[in-house]
Image (tube, rainbow, N blue to C red; front, side, top):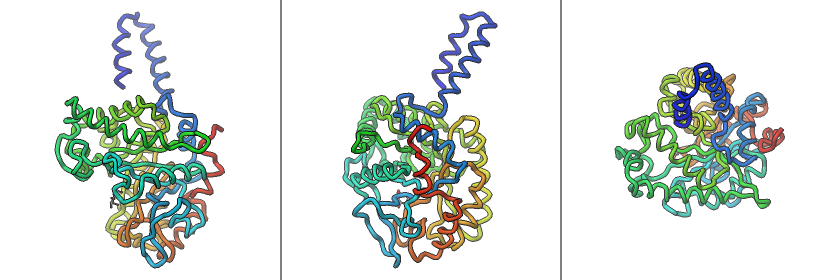
Length: 388
Ligand code: BMA
């Protein structure tokens, strides 16, 4: 957007009629660049973006956070991965989720495990294995406060973002943390030397105020500038295997959704997070809220030529045995969403996907067998990373 306004000010030197021709030309060229914010993105990354824009015509891909890292056994006890080919969803359906979520929180601390105890080396191997099987990877980031690394993402220190933007030393500290992130993304290579494309979804749920990048702690302009700084720096570091996903929490309307949107040249995928709480009393409200927000994203996605997704959702402990068919599917059908990702199976009291013997596993299997949600086998044949 910034580039566009510079070009418009330069139009004053042209006669009136040619100005309108140039405006038409600029609008056309700007529109053409929408949908891929990094012109240097690898071919596989560009192809993934195109595939995400069309996959909804077949079905909605189902994702699960940390699917390959840990989960729950038949008796509800925790298992922790040794390899990269076992997941709770696989143990029920015989296939992994189509989208596997990972989180890089604590990479900025240069630790070997993330904030949920997963080895970064395991994350790296899982991303490569998922790609090689034909699935999709999405990466969120719950970083500690860059200016006080003893404070987690859930830190309410005000003005962290302006303090980074307005002070060179602070900015360098943050950019140093991005260097670590960049090195991780660049390490995602297959044995035949291809960079694995991933959906990167930083600074999410920023419409809320529970993270240091939340709405109460920076202005919309500061959030946008911080986002652009991040995107531009990673691109300058030649990280060319990312699709950037902008992802709010619940939002009221289109204006609210776009309030902190950094611009079409800085976002590849439109996302939102919406959890279902207080079931069954709230079943109807959850369905209608997700439908309402999904239709705002559908309109924006069509206008901007960008895919849209429900980037985090779930009902903790899936306390409704027919939740998949009667609630989630009802909320997202006809939405045009590329994918829906349920959160992690972290503990016996904190999980969002079924495991063997869970009361909702039959319903889960049913919606998958009916083709309503796509798992890994269904997307493998679509060859998401190859030009069609
Ligand atoms: C939250 C919870 C936390 C976890 C965090 C990042 O929603 O699951 O336990 O640390 O996500 O994965």
